[in-house]
Image 1 (cartoon, rainbow, N blue to C red):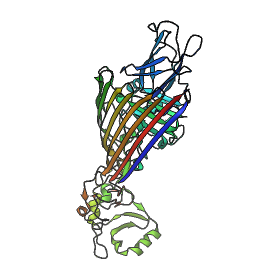
Image 2: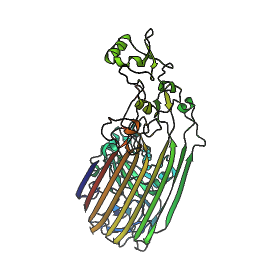
Image 3: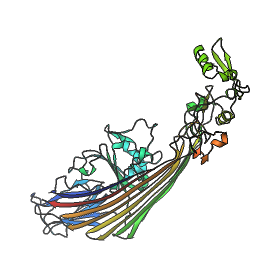
Image 4: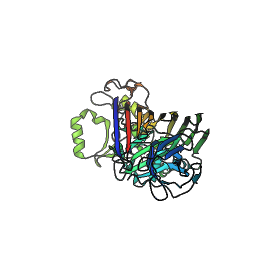
Length: 563
């Protein structure tokens, strides 16, 4: 077992002018900035800017400085409304503002002279553009996540909607969820963020079959953002894309949804290879169900959200063609396909192993090996037929065709997956907001399925895989003054993955009369190829495999606004 433990501590002190991109160590939150002025263009210092999250009614208040600028940082993604008030001017209320993960929006306001009690409400306007940064990004919101079809319900497949994103090649050699190349970069060079903390897996040889640790259900997500170019220094080690994902939170209303997806093979056609072998299509059955619900604990102050999803499937899979001996071959009769040889090879064989000459049924005229005399005796008195070989060859199934030695099947692949997310948000005071999220994921399935059905002889690397992950993210945002805000975050992610042989535990060598196995084999038989040219038997020596990855992360972002 190999363990990988990573710890990162980041303290970022940001000092700069209001509209410089230096104020952007927000990760999963957003920023709204702007200028307040009168109809002549003169700036209005001391104006009160109140930003309210429409779903929770949690507010963030700030004042314009001497040059009329305001800034509100560390805002949770979601819908907002902004109210601007100043003495001697009518108030302005703007609704319908949507802030995405890691957004930095500029919203300027012009106040008309009048009483503060008079309110001008703005409900429309041009779409908001992010003019404060040079990020090249795409946002996949909750509506797109819920409405677009997803085979397998892996939200990360929606990355393909972003420009420059392609499915990574050679998936068959190393199949992994979330394997995408972005702008030509390696699929291992993307960076995953979940709820503001590191969500990257570092298991050995990608044994957990995903580059990310937490894998929330699509219905658990508010949105995720794919940044493909010119992202900020906090994501500095990513060469590909930054995938920034946010789990939903509760609101002042109790909201929920439930789902069930079912798929079967009633209308499926048999594929080409099974048709050629005269076999039926394998079973396909999939059920995925779950629910998501959230609401208030204390209105306008404390909120909760929980989701759970279960997936249970059994799907026949085409696992290629194995080479197995026919019934006649097992009896030593090669008449179906005699084995050619050269006269020189045959003469050399008789020189090296002369005692086996009586065992060979040879056509020396045509240089063909017609079979083996398994009931005969060697010249040293030993039988030509080996009882160990007779026992091992019975592990092979009979050929299914169309080739003489071809065996093909569509064995069922079980798949069981459970995942859930739990989130709490709380406003401690007008200057303090905290949240905590726990994400859990667990999946069990068969991987690298060989073509043979016997657990002692799969003809491949067949293994039973279990992957279990945990992600904990905690955050505390504290406003020290109108110009100084601190964002402290702590995160832990952990992956533990195992891949065990499908063969029964215990050494099976004595059961077949094998006395010289390499040590005591923990699962079944060691790799054996008893008949040259046919598929291997036994379990490969790198099973079982265990791998663990852990990341502990502490981040503190101190934002200081000037100008």
